Length: 307
Length: 210
Image 1: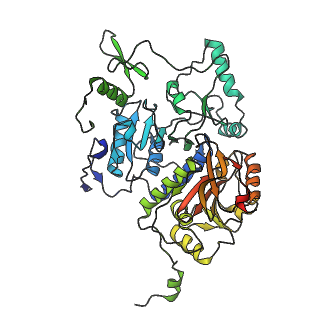
Image 2 (image 1 turned 90 degrees about the horizontal axis):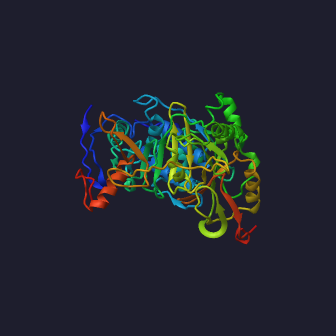
Image 3 (image 1 turned 180 degrees about the vertical axis):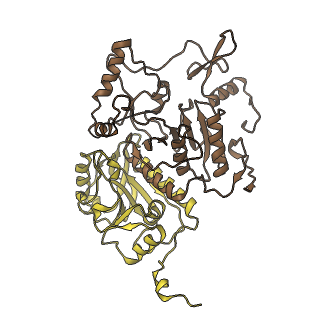
């Protein structure tokens, strides 16, 4: 397989993977893309409703973001700038590989900077930097059906969504409060979209749920194994389920980030030695880096990302 | 040496995408933008030359989204052999005899009763059809006020000479949500979308002339 070299240094692209020849642009064939595009348009027209689609076999196993990749492959164009994060980080295995995949098959520019990206594919986080109009956030979704743990039959959950029969979900949350005194769900916390469909926000921490509400960017969700695509258009009401006397709350930390000192970002706890010493750092690596740059007023890394 | 007369006459007039993969992607992204921000007027920059009476935008949307898996119904006012031949040749789509069978429909401003179209079911609302309506004017004048998902507060829009009955018809259809029809209005190379969730208030009926 011959490869042509790519040399793009604009827009903060970091890697210059060689474009593989012999592949369709962004891997998928055009007929598949059209089918996915039609599903995406219907998903946008019916916010929060899971549209079935003919999920294809991808060159990586289900569970590694095949749904998100198929959505990204169907929307991405030559002028797009792609950012991929996994648990907030740009440099974890899943993020690096998906970014390289699109670098190799589509030759698009990639970036770590949230505000420079036009398409952001994410696994399990929403970036701390607020997203803007004309950006698209693509979520990788393992289980798209929020009612699945309460009702295993697809025929039944489909009926429940059709009739907006969501009592069982509230009973589930109520039982949680009855047992533990609070809702213990900390990630994949169910939301209601535009006062109609109950939707799984994918396994993002509930810390990120408020960011979905009235977000100026378009949010697309792809579940490859479960073969579902759903969407939240910009400026759409997204409400986390709660009760009047048990309002929805997000996580908070007594610590602040050990690297950048941020006290309002989502923190990961990191064990640093065998003695159990631990530190808390921002889960969003790009946000953390930008905070440090602001503090030191100088670019921290010189890998082509510094401006 | 000589080209068969019969097969020559089968070739459609006009011009399709020069680079189908990338141009389809561009057109789709513009439609996605218009569908996710109802009332936002979007231009489809394309070099295609569709046969009349198809507008550039109508043809580009069909070339980008339709294939052998979709059924298209064309209203009699726009239903010419050239148009059908062009779309069938470049996309491989199937032509529906009845509007009820179609996933996509192309109409003029004389819009029939919306009951004629497939609005999906409560279980599978995505089967509701997409109606592409060719109109004579699309501007952001205050003829209609739009609210709903994709719109920050509210937006103004004016869509040529659509009769008032259409808007009443659409209001009634919205009671059946999640069932519904999604509309894409086109004029020359511009387009604007009204998905089933958008609430439309008619501000100035006199602009319509009905």
